[in-house]
Image (cartoon, rainbow, N blue to C red; front, side, top):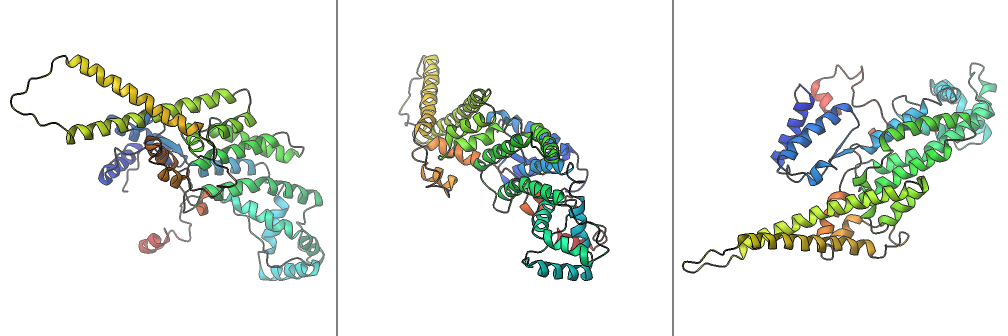
Length: 414
């Protein structure tokens, strides 16, 4: 896209693309990275779509923030608190990998202490938070080799103490679920939105458990991360919580369980809010289906008028009758959601690998309106990026070594 890249121009370009693709009246949500430019742009775009009355719930669920970006911000904030604690380990790995000669000496130490040499060391990269986790995971396995290196290499001055290794193990263990979560929610095969709530809840649970950790470094790290978490995820996304309810293995019971584990005093209020919004959303789908089917019947089954027919009087009565029909369908549609919620949940252990979208496809006849809503909600992308980029804060920026490349080569790299 040529400049200017203002919020107005970005919104106009996206809107034009939606119209060109013929989906401007079919948009349910838009998942964006967590930057201010996107916040401003989506507001304008939502205004465009709202003018043509094409947004469900007046756009209440339109903007979805990229979960991987937010998780990255949370972890980066925590790592600021442990830079000093991990200094010697970072420098040790950097020292060994700085030259072939040092690496050879280190490998001799590895063999001497009997460590599997196939593991390998990982360098820490400042723009990729997962590199810190991978560095710790690998370096911890070579603890004895680093201790041996200080006796055969007089220039090596960074051997960590036993206390520093102990703390590194705690930090590595603490970071592991964040690493696994980022890998889960990112990738070329984007996960359905029913995974969102469980992952965010798991992260909050870990942070709450460690807010008063005995280790001061871990406690400080966790407190910083919790502040960042509360900034973006204190109020879980309601529309993505719908994904849990529409997973036949979890439904509302799983939400109740999660909310109660976090805060019993607000559990009922949060659950009722999700349930109310869920019914309101479903009512719109039920009305929409009713309107389209009524329109279809009226155009295809109109009786042929013979001779000079007389116009029926009392049109007000028929208007009221139409409203009565809509209300009746409204209640029947609501019952469809009740039926689903009242049905027994599927056993998670038996259906661990359940494809939730296929479940709703197979049950479309049983839940005609609800299956359409489930398709739209579950297909919301919870992230905008692949896992390779999820850990990076560097962005898609060319390095100084690539900034002078020919434009064709640059395009190939991108």
